Image (tube, rainbow, N blue to C red; front, side):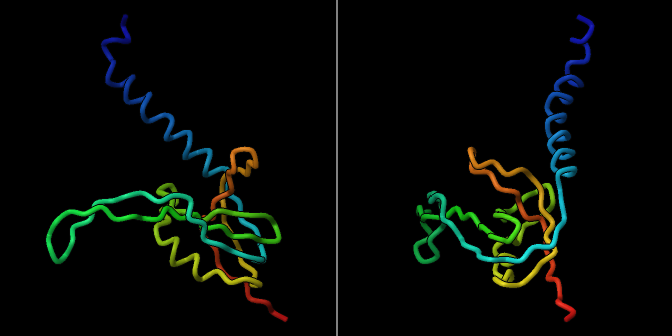
Length: 133
């Protein structure tokens, strides 16, 4: 029962350890490769109701908000592009608009592809590769 003296440390370890393991796993699974974008789409996967204050009346009203899933198709497979706090990517919608079909990019991504669970590797960052010819 000696561990009960240190219950705060044990609890902190139990809470923090999964986040540290996820961070290390995601960091080690990141890959960089040159890809050519063959297509892209914005899928609306869900609609949720959020509260918003009406500017005219000042009342709180419920409005629908789309939950988007940005998909990027390349010659090396399909990728998802969504916000992630792990790599501090917040402006995904704006960056997604910069991707152009037919152009090549140096793509940094992480994760695993699972067809069964419908999981895709997530894009972290990209930069256009200029053709020197």
